[in-house]
Length: 326
Image (tube, rainbow, N blue to C red; front, side, top):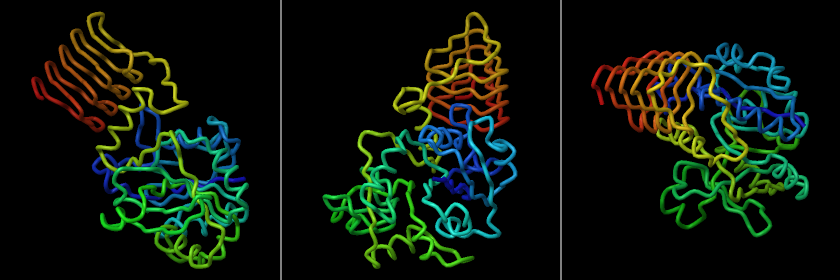
């Protein structure tokens, strides 16, 4: 089995963080987001991975390389123009000619991918979609399944009335697809799984199943709010299978306070009286005397000046928060 990660989005909802950094490689606890997805695939025994790129592809390839350091083999394809989620799958024909596991490149999850693959095979499905239960499904694809898990309806971004009448299980952006699905996607055209292919599968009455995640962690890293939440959840241990690395070399004064949850990047300077609480500090950042960083994410090479207070915030790369600023 091969995997395809759809990593071509511009990340407009996550701006300004994604103006110069493609969303698939925004740092999560100082690791690119895609590293977490590659970990999931490798742990499931999938080491042949294709990344479908579009926005700033060179930056992604430069960071990930050929995948050897991550224990996988990476291949890159760059869409000539935006082709949609299903169009990108069709464009990656080598992947689509075998059973393929497809992931959206902007999700953080601890789902054991072996479970959805086993579910897919046990149902002899043509397509299986991972589902997550959420309180407000109006921003996602709403999926209704029967008692056996067969998908009976798919509504992309439903109204509140539609959501109340159907279900609260949404498209989690993880699919297992047989090559038969390839026949539903016209070559070199813009096609979306959510708006075009999934409704077509239902209309053709093909074996289409939903695997409902139970107890697993899942989050769409689509907005600054959810980006910050991902960090708070990771630091609190809510994401299974993720052990934060030992703190790398940095210069922290004896009288600085760094709690056990926090992650401090390599080459940081933490001055006397500074307090780092439940936060992530990017490589090369400076936190000056008696500054406070709490429940926040500070990107690399940013300076937090003396007596400044940063709470529940995301500060981008190479920024300066001035003295006494809150």
